[in-house]
Length: 308
Figure 1: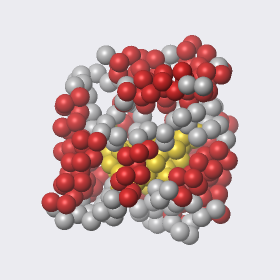
Figure 2: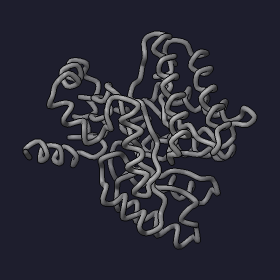
Figure 3: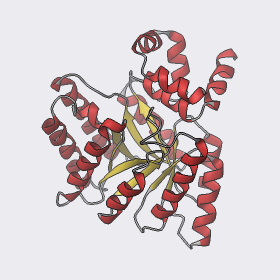
Figure 4: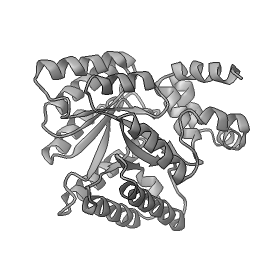
C-alpha cells in the first residue's frame, strides 16, 4: 500500500512545488541528494571514492519542455565528464532521455546523447554513459536509442541500458541487449505500471530479478546489480561463488544515502560497489520513487527529522 502511495505522490505537481520550495523538503532530500550544483555532486563523489566505492552521477530532471533546456542539460553532462577526468574521479554518468529533449525533438535528443557517448568513449581513461529507464511509454524508444548508440563505431562498451525486473517484457529485452554485449543496470522498477505489463507482487518482482540477475552474471559482460535487498545480494554472492564468477566481473549498485553500512561491507569483502549520486533542484519525483522502492526509508526520514 505504501509503495502505491509514494508512486502516486511522485506525480503530484502541487505537492512537488510545495516540497521543492520548503526548508523541510530540502532537509529531507539532503540525505539522498548530493546538492543542487555540479560542485556538490563532485564533492560527494570524491568522498565516496575515498571509501573505495565508484560512482554514477545523475543530474535530476526529466520531461524538459523546450530545446534550450535540453541543450543546457547536455552541456551540464559535458561539464561532469570533463571534471571527472580533471579530478581523477572513479565515476561515470547517468541520464534520462526526456531530460535530453526526447519529448520535444527526438532527433535533437539523439544528437545530444550521441555527442556525450562519443566523448565518454574518447576519454582517457574511457568513460561510460548509462541511459536510465523511465516509465513504460518510453521503454521501447529508450532501448532503440541504446542499441543505436552502441552500434556507432567506437561507442562499444561506453553506453548501457537499464532493465526493470518488474516489466514482463524484460527477459526478451535482456536477450536482445546481451546479443550485442550491451551493459545493463538491473533494478526492480519504480513507476506505476498496469498489471498486464508489469508484475505487481513483491514475490513476483523478486523472482524476476533473480532470474535476470543470474543471466547477466553468466553473460561475460560487465553489468550492475542495483538493489538494496540484502536477501537478493546474498543470493548473488552465493551464485557467483558457486559458478566461479569473479568478484570483479560485475558490480553491486546502491543509491546515495541508503544502506551505507552494507555498501562498505561489500567493499571490505572484495565485491565491487557503485553508488548512484543524484543532484539538482528537481529532487521531489526522485525521492518519492525511492520511498516507493523501499518504504522503510520513510521511517528513517521521520526519525532524522525529530533529531536536533
